[in-house]
Image (cartoon, rainbow, N blue to C red; front, side):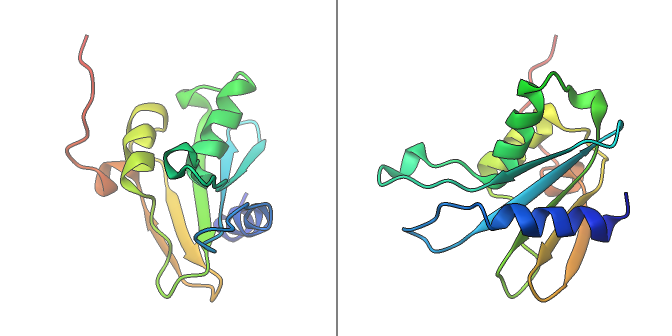
Length: 131
């Protein structure tokens, strides 16, 4: 799957956002080696700590379907922002543990701007447990 196709999946997922408080809809799409795409959108709640970001929804969705870190190829996210949308700190921490550190993350916006990065670049000093 081409990056622009994965970004289009994230844009579609964004339409499923429930964001009546922030009015900031975000969509994410997670590509697996077998070609499956798991989508996520941000879901808000009046009790703000109970909200869930699009990136974590997509990742947790994949895990709930039996996927693991080694199955993931790339992730895309999209929001209506001036610059390409970047994962929040909580998502960066979760991605640092459950997503391959050098797999591409395509950050995008509705204007078509795209920035490619990876979690190693986004969170270079991640908190990780050592065996």
